Image (cartoon, rainbow, N blue to C red; front, side, top):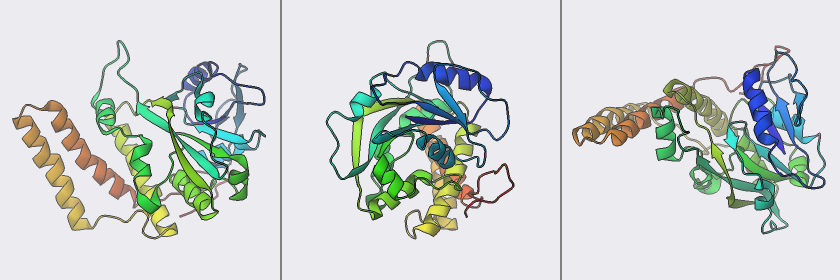
Length: 292
């Protein structure tokens, strides 16, 4: 199991404490990959932490964690998920097909925690099921698995040479497409489900969406037709109509949640499309440039 991390030291300690509750069998290993380019090394603890400081990218961090193990399958989790103790057992009940190269675990948004303010960003993420694998698995020939919770057969992973180190976003779709091109199948394992902690603020939510937009633009250049952009006129028309018209209509019906969804739908789309103008190059400790 490999979990990339980039955040404050306190969050790393909390992550290790959570992961220590996962049930590991014989031959299983658990590695957190600290992808901060600078900062102190992690203190000792029950969960192994290794540093990966060449590229500030989740793909690079996952690659660095994957090479430390030897198990038949590599389970990738994001640091912002809560996993049940028996997650590994759930993935392999029943056993995957021999040609399955990647398994898509289930992802659902975390409900409000006791005593914490349920902000608009978290409510929107739950209403839209923001990180559900169903969202990306419904893309037809361009369906892909989100690495927030997925397992990859090691032989398949090594055959396609793992993730792209030098892509800031979109590395999960890129891996899925290369596995498919190599003849490996995709299986959905919804019962191997984790809870996802969404961004706590609207600003953070939109910044994440802009990052996804940069990844989508890179993917569309690499795999033409996979993530086509909206036309400028259509973008302005739909975004404005949804954010303003939909929001006002919902408020007139006294539907607060509907108004929130309408406004953030429009902002979500704008952030994604504006994000296409950004570079998909990750930061590098050596000043190198990644892929465009």
